[in-house]
Amino acid sequence: MGKTLNIAVLAGDGIGPEIIEQALKVTKAVCNKFGHELKYKKALTGACAIDAVGDPYPEETHQLCMESDAVLFGAIGDPKYDNDPTAKVRPEQGLLRMRKQLGLYANLRPVETFESLLHKSPLRKDLVEGANFMCIRELTGGIYFGEKGREDNGNTAFDNCVYTREEIERILKLGFEYAMERNKKLTIVDKANVLETSRLWRQIGQEMAPKYPEVETEFMFVDNAAMRIIQWPKSFDVMVTENMFGDILTDEASVITGSLGLLPSASIGLHTSVFEPIHGSYPQAAGKNIANPIATVLSAAMMFEYAFDMKEEGALIREAVTQSMEKGIVTEDISKENPHSTSEVGDWLVDYISSK
Ligand code: IPM
Ligand code: MG
Image (tube, rainbow, N blue to C red):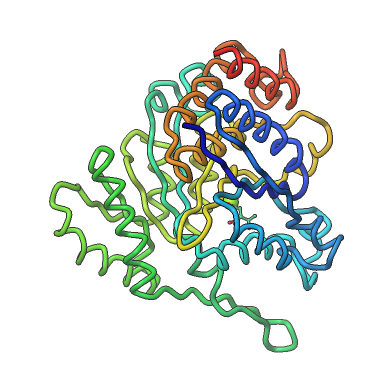
């Protein structure tokens, strides 16, 4: 039986609107196929929200997110803020406030390789083939949200990194649970040789590990993890780490799959879940119809699976994506020789889904 899906669509800045349009088309096609009713509302966030109403995450947008079953998110950020370190309001604050206000403490970033794109990886084929791990990034704590400021007439700056036991326990619990469902290996990434917060993470990890005797738990310093992602990505199954380490490691991990434009994410926690690509707003490509929409389309697949427990719907999107790659219907980041536009890729996916 068909269901009604109420989703909030936040396109954001840069390439956000173009990639969201493709993901929305695909979502509609899937809903048509399976007899679901799609109801969606758009709202402002990021630089475009600052321009329109002076706030990167307006209350109206927050209310819409709270009332919706899921949020599909594009990207935010604008070079005019990146190059102005003194700007008081920044687009990224919108994303961070959204995560905090929705209580999205866990960001799931699956790192998967595609058989037909192995030759695009900067790594040797034998190293990446079959690499598949889940990075769980803590999303509402750490240095991102600690007290920050300036002293000494602006000549000294600080960002505090704070984690509570409760924050660490809930994210590590998710890590252990994912490991139980997958290949039972958990890598807890920290910098316990230097940071006090990391020592608390490691202490709590050590306390919890005996409760999951089937899981092989390893602790790894973040610098070592960065190296291992390049040297031997297949050694990971589930990785769990704090906010900033997870931000950096997942950008690194994404390129081993062939392009930063491929990896989706799901942010889950206390209120409505948010589904967004892990890449940024790629302002240089905005409006050119060249950006890769796949990360956002795969985020829509995660939305069906995680927010609506609709596995078949998600699987159909994944199948369409795999097929599009095999047929060479890809954007210029993947094929310089024979690039397709953002909307052509979207159209192809919609046709594939509709004809199934
Ligand atoms: C991400 C992004 C954001 C982050 C930025 C845009 C604030 O890089 O989602 O990975 O650092 O979390
Ligand atoms: Mg990032």
